[in-house]
Amino acid sequence: MLLLASVAIAGSSASSFATDGGDWIGGNVDGGVLVLEDTAGDLDLGEVLTFELTARVRLATGDRFEVQLSDACRLSVDYTGTRSIAFGTGAVPFAAAELLMVPDAAALLTPMIDEVGGIRHPDVVQFAGEWWMFYGAADGSGAPAVHAARSTDLATWTRVEGFSLPGASEPTAIVEATSLVLYYADGGSIWRTQSDDGVSFDFPTVALAPGPGFDAAGLGHPAMLFDGDGLWQLWYGVPTTGASGSASSADGLTFTRDAELSPDSTRLSGLDVTDGLLGFEAVYTMLDSVGFASSADDSNFADDSSDVRPALVMNQAAWSDGGFGTAALVRNGVDLTVFVAAMDDGLTVIGRVTTQPEPGTWGGLSMTWDGTEVLASWNGGPTQSCALTDFEGISIVGVGRAEVDEVRVDYSAEGAIDTADTGGLDTGDSADTADTGDTASDSADTGGPAYNAGEWMGEPGGCGCESGTGGGGGGAGVVGLVLAGVLARRREPGSGR
Image (spheres, rainbow, N blue to C red):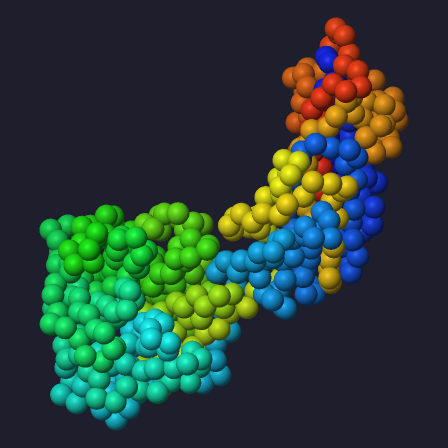
């Protein structure tokens, strides 16, 4: 059942009521969820000054859904076309947690004859108009070394002939101005070197050495970000224990430890991190899986289950039959690409995984309007804005099957609204009031001018009633605050709820 709870304040009078899905024009309520099959569901709020909307929405099947406030001001969550979340004139990509990982059919890079035992630990960066991949492989003598390859499309790679950094392993690359800065592991420390052409590098220096604490056994698997404003952020692992930590620097030369991220390999091993519109996004690897981690504003990736999501498991890719090594994450506009080392028939190869938005999962929608501008965000992503001065109603459109759940709208309006069916929201107030007939009880439940909690949560005890608190009532022209809560609650079979 679709429940609607509201409170109108005009002077000192108040009312609350419950209703069904009749306030929505279009769609149908199925199992407590508003279903839109290639159609629109419209909610007319009447003449309002401001509103706040929250809801859970999902595209069960199809291409996209839209939340329309005007012809020019609509939020489009597009899974197949632009593969982005567009609002007004702006657009942002889907977050990693909403993406399905799709492995290439074959390994991207396999070992050359002089890359003994396989290739591993890729990192990818855009430099001088091309994509550069740095990776580790033993040389002909069996000693570790870093090699390189280049690409224009992230799909076809050509090795850089003659390039090698002997003794180095587990590289990570950063672009600073016109220089390419490379960090890598060697002898238990993290080292730094720099190049103007990606081929010839300066004499290396130590950026971070083992400490007296959790990383005393030696450092490895570095991942680096430079924010352009002078902050260098380093994530690294402890290969012998699987622990991981973070450090930061003001110059990229000397780093100070910030935090231990995870004490063992059960989480966040071998992070590779990007930072952009969506905040911090990372890919992490463990022996039998590759996953995403995300953190909007906390570079420490708190060791919390909400931050991490396994996304690719062993044998899911044709080139992975024995587990995964570390991976590299590339955010290129709306595209997110992962390069991962994996065991394939006894050799370590590098595979590529592309991503695509995955319909079918629930996401959180948030919109606010102050009378001139709408601010909107999808599933905790960045806020986008759209100018709007003439608001007529909210329309949710499914291109395919869209489902809407747990909708709440809080809004303010001019004058006394909805106490006499004037707001266009509900046609059943009188019947609801007559059904309940218990104004004292409801007034106590509500605590004055607010919605009844029982009605809001869909629990037994919600009622439709109207109560006056005495005193003079506000007339036309008095600004009344109307809080309207709309909840489409999913019913569980046999639960009676």
